[in-house]
Length: 135
Image (cartoon, rainbow, N blue to C red; front, top):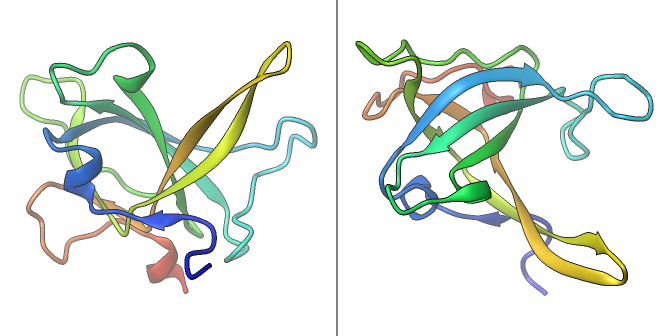
């Protein structure tokens, strides 16, 4: 198979109506209580809490996390005037499918979202710290 691991995808395919970031935090391994590291790069993992701007999005689809591997915490763009969150675009997005165990022998295909960086919408060249920048 030609594709191994995450599937590359454009930001506009995942968030056609845009996205808003609420915040960013380090991902901690639940069992070891240590920072989670990216298996490919060895860099620490960060989770950006995102609200999908799609007015039709509901439930779990409305609020998601996008993971970024970076040496330091990614910097989010400034808040939108009068709003408590920040409009964002993610660069180098990828979708990683996995099997989620629901219990009682039931499973479903789920996915996690990854990105190389985060920036303000339309801000060409003005990126936050990302795995590419840290390398």
